[in-house]
Each structure stands twice: as C-alpha cells, then as structure tokens.
Image 1 (tube, rainbow, N blue to C red):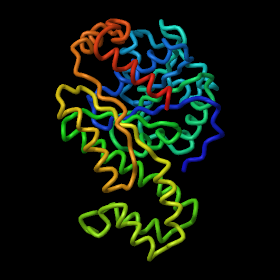
Image 2 (image 1 turned 135 degrees about the vertical axis):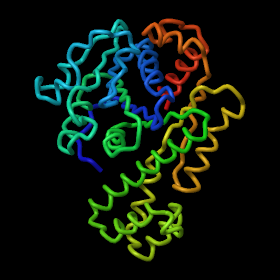
Image 3 (image 1 turned 30 degrees about the horizontal axis):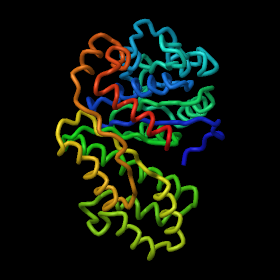
Length: 307
C-alpha cells in the first residue's frame, strides 16, 4: 500500500463514481454540508484533477487559490489553499485544472498530497474523486476510512463501478505482494487481469485456489486484506423498486467474483430539486432543504456517523 504518515484522528470519506454524470460531486457537496450542519468541522477536497467543478456546486465563483498552487509549490502547506464557504464549519479545497498532465500525478507528488490531506485540521474529510479507474483515482481512495461508491441504476454505470472496485482490489493486492516480495503472486495476479486468456482465474476464489499451489503462505494475508475492504454503495437517481435493488445486485457480484463483503448504504431518489439547485449554483440542502433528496442525504450522513 502507498505509505503515508500516521493519520490524524478524523473520519475520511472517499466518494468515487467511475462513470461521469452519476451525481458523485453533488452527493459529495451536499453530504459535506449535512455533516457541517450537524456540527462537525468538515473539509471537502476536489480531487477530480483536470475537471474540477465542486466549487460551482457550492456556489463559489471566485476560487482564489486552488490545488494547482500547492502542486506548483506556490504555497508550502495545503491548508493555505483552504476556502471557507458560506456554511459554518465547511471549508473547500478547489481542484486543480491548469497544471498540464495533472491527472497523471507522479508517485512522490501523490504521496505528498495524501500526507497533507490527512493532516488537515477537521473532524471529517471528504475526498471527491475523479471519474475513471486510473491508478491516481484508485490510490487516493486508499487514505479513506470509508469508500462511498456511487452508481445509478443503469447497467453501464453498475458495471463501471464493479470494474473500479475490481481495479481497487487488484491495486491493493499488488502493493501487498510487492511489500511481501511475493513475486510469484504478482505474476499470478497479472495473469488474472486477462480473464479471456485465463478463464480459470475469473474469480477471487479461483485465484486463491491457484495461490495455494504457488505460495500457500500468502493466502491468509490476501484473505485478511479482502476482509478489511468493505465498499459502501450509494445508488443515485432511484425511481422504482427495481432501481433500489441495484445495490443488492452489485453486492452479489462483489461477493461472487471478488470475495468481498459490501454494504448498500443508501438509495437516493431522482429529484427535480437537484437539477434546479445545480442551475442556481447552490447545494440542494440550502436551496430546498425539505426536498426528498435533501432528507435522504441527511439520513446518509446520520448513518455514516453511526458507522
């Protein structure tokens, strides 16, 4: 796993929505607001590198300093680019978009940013990740205590999210095997990436069967790592009972093919109030606090506080 310094005592949530347009940033912004309304000191960081728009969802037109300033070393500490929002207890780190190739951040720069993120003074840190399944997106999710994975009921969105979680699992295993110098297992994992050429490795259960033959001592470590990774699924834009069942479908896929347990944490409703608030550049919790979506987001925040 990527080495970061010891985490300061705070809750860290990473919000991932590998398919664009699933409402990931809208959920991130309003969830941060719900936590702040409840009295927590919250920082939300826009890590949708190269396509940052979280500030607009929070009604901020003049961003001032952004993540670019930290990456370009115009400021020494990440805390210097924090922007206070109109909501008490809620601060924002605007995403970078002006640094060429920022989405392909070098390893050491990525680790530096991670360390600065976890040292920020707040009760809760929410990381709004970019779309896609690149290593940078996956790696930033590793510093979170809880991963919130957003999908809509469409099959394409569902399969994109499954692919993202699979990439995350394989990335975690890769770091684990490199640390353990288990090179035979790294080779086995590379073969498992190509399911067409190696159909006998099309599930984690089958990979572990082969691992018993290759390096039986590594199996216990793999099972422990898998047990510690519990994705929390959020299904957005739910309209029907069938839509609400999507989380259960994804849970089944993750259990059957990746041998990981997951939780369907929330089904968020399709709500016209959301689009209206986006057009106004205001979070829906402020623009329409009694809307169905707003109530569902507050319930999500309560559930996450309990967990």
